[in-house]
Amino acid sequence: MSLSSVTVSMVSAFSDKSDGGNPAAVIELDSWLADELLQTIARQQAAPVTVFVTPENKGYNIRWFTQSEEIDLCGHGTIAAASVLLAANATTSIRFFSAHGNPQVEKYADQFSLQFPVWPITPEPQDFSQCAINNCASQQAFSSRDLVLVLASEAQVRDFTPNLDYIKSLPWHALIITAAGEHCDYVLRNFVPSVGIDEDAATGSAQCSIAAFWAKKLVKTHLNARQLSQRGGDFSIECANDAIVISTAATLDRQYSLALKELI
Image 1 (cartoon, rainbow, N blue to C red):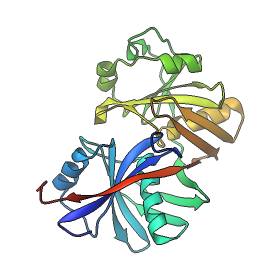
Image 2: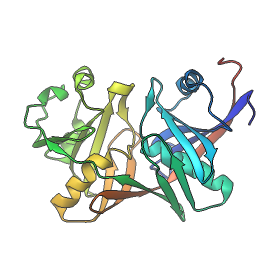
Image 3: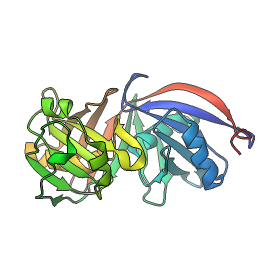
Image 4: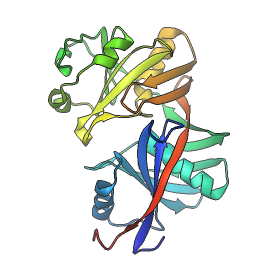
């Protein structure tokens, strides 16, 4: 890598298949480029999130950009970055540093584990039926960073047709819909039009909003979840009092060189 070009690693996180999970572009830099250039680079990538990392004393600084703006946390982007860096450094643990926390990723065989906080939730008594274009009433609603609607069945989650304009007008980061799973503990879908992502393929940070809810409801500390997006995503989750540990796979799809002079 030089200042004239960067190497882009395209990784599918939360899946052991290149056409599954959530894609992220990972770029390692020697030092930070201008924020405007980072955003321009992210806008050029065929991925919902581009992750930039720079070396730090005991790990790596990390920042996450969608195609429209910088965001404060991205689980699949963190897993993707860890998979690239751990392969290059032949180690099994890596610490990241960001303005919003210092996530650590551990590698066990072909799985990557990432600890997240449990976000406090607040009941939301109002009617959110406008979130769906089709008729899909929720059984329960609560909020954290995200608005969460608990639906009656996996089929309702799968068939949900989002009203993206209405969802974008809400004061939360994302809309998560969830239900008990037929072949796993729970299923979910995640809509984030506020940052230019109509539906996210596989979302680690969404589990901060819902994993503890399902752990309490099902009286379990180990949960298996499935995100019902077109690409799909799988999560193995351990729940403690104030934290969750997500374990999953990540697949390197391809690497390519990006010339910076064409973007400046």
